[in-house]
Image 1 (cartoon, rainbow, N blue to C red):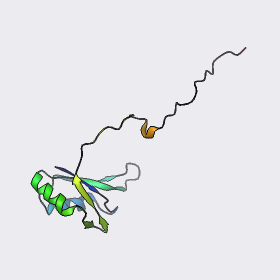
Image 2 (image 1 turned 120 degrees about the vertical axis):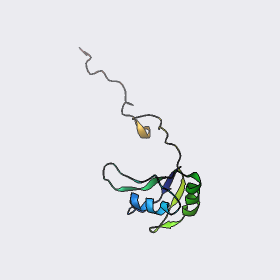
Image 3 (image 1 turned 90 degrees about the horizontal axis):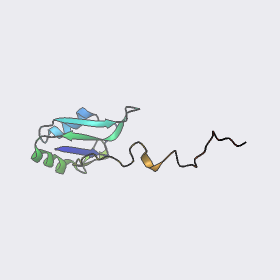
Image 4 (image 1 turned 135 degrees about the vertical axis):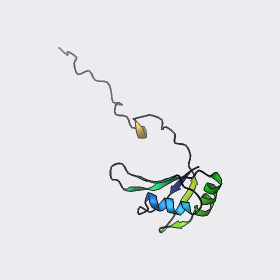
Length: 107
């Protein structure tokens, strides 16, 4: 089961997450997500646990727990979905202006 953890302290590393969740069972992987430009934590992560019962126990025990000075949210991770619009994110478009023909002969 893939587990989503939100509101992590920026000091928490992937190994820290793994240690916390191993108290509830076997952990296949643990990863804190970092910003691709700065390398700093984005404050959330994912833990993969192969045993669903152990994963559910971890979710129940750790959801709304105080971890490294912050109250974390722990839930089953939802599948990633594609955002509409592809490359044009946020509803911004750079081609909204009137069409101009710069090659027309006026004379």
